[in-house]
Length: 189
Image 1 (tube, rainbow, N blue to C red):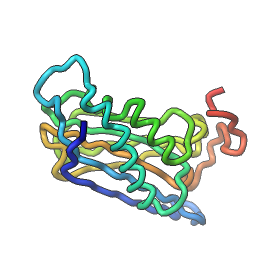
Image 2: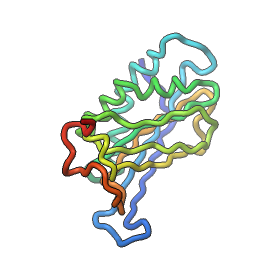
Image 3: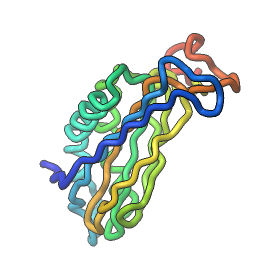
């Protein structure tokens, strides 16, 4: 099975300060979206294998492009999908499940659960992709988002599938919680 990609969109953001002193290095965020055809648009199916099975290969390409756009090592990640209005939210989830998550983690050297967001919406809708530290979910300084919008997608019979990466935690993180240096294992203990 092969997913048909109509277009790619890349978003890069660099933040040197957020109302306080400048930080060095700045926070870099990159997100890459693939607008794919939804084989289940307008119809019910008990299984969603046509999205789940090829999703790992799609994730590899999205991660490769996102790492290139980020330009530095990825410290945090997230994933998301916007399903066109002839589909259902579960179609987006099918694109992001285990094969996709495993490929994303492997692509950036992560080992923890990857945060995600999915919804059904019209073309041009924004989605916030949640970010978390790649090896320990509860490291608070990495809780952030990347906002993505595709002006002409998803069309009703499409899905926008997104990988987001960031180079560090928030630029002025100072609210405590589990520190990166103190994280053990996946940070869930």
